[in-house]
Image (tube, rainbow over all chains, first blue to last red; front, side):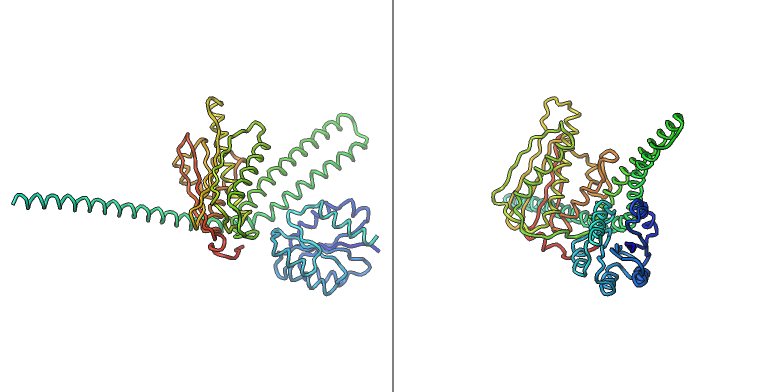
Length: 129
Length: 310
């Protein structure tokens, strides 16, 4: 069964950025990536994730409509087994405390440190392997 | 009659002196008031400018992140492209030209990355302006924090410019004691002032060609009872009056492009005045010295308006 990473960000250019960054892994079918441009879209995609194993959700915090902070507990109710990593431009201590309390694995700051993110993804891959 | 008149004359002289003294006193307090008013206006201006710059910084940060991410990524893609080409059957002349073009593209991307990072550091500094009370405040030994900042700044300057040297003198008042403050922020202020001082001595040293000039920076602390004073003095190039007027303004810098963001002193002003309810002043003699004087109330952090504003 193929492994899926879902990325939630309202910026459309996040998709090519991630697809290029992980193009080797995607081409080698180590995992696939899907993208949601809103929290609502994300919840829908998680609901309909059939035939794939969702191994990780990466979510932006500042999004119009439902924010990443509101999305996080909803994902945790829907799929408590799926790890969520939050990404924000403003990684202050208060936000970090809040997202960890709400069940996030980690809080990464933008500009995204792709080396750190890759490590997180490798950890997830190692767990399901 | 004569006695009366001389008596009146003497009395008049006394009255005249008294009036003159009063006038002097009044004009002095008027001057103090004007200075205080100027400072208030300046603080207000800085506050609204701070909010504006923070707003702009927020808006710029996201697109800038994309520029930085995509350019770094493209640099890696070029490396990949090179390894693909290495194995491709190509005519020698074509290979040479492709190789040259790829090298140019790669170096252009490096420039984009480099300047992107520069812009990012400006934006991050701008955002620092809007954040009150990052970190925790706690009672801090003033002499220790000044000493630590001196060492940090000194080693930083040495690492940046191996030939750099300066004599450091410390006049620490054993009574300086503790102040309740945000250590990270006050360290930032001290680092700013000290490295500005180093910069000024290096500049004067370069102009003097080393002839008979001994670059010196001194740090002085003094207890003023319920307040503490810190002085950072350098014998560098000094500050001309027209620069002094603008030096606390955001984005004002006398350094060459790329060397200063123009936010160091305006940030320091905000931290000392707004975050710690203190004062920061400067006296300077162009070509002779510059001295910054910070006064912090002992209960600095709790006196200033509490709570962060984003």
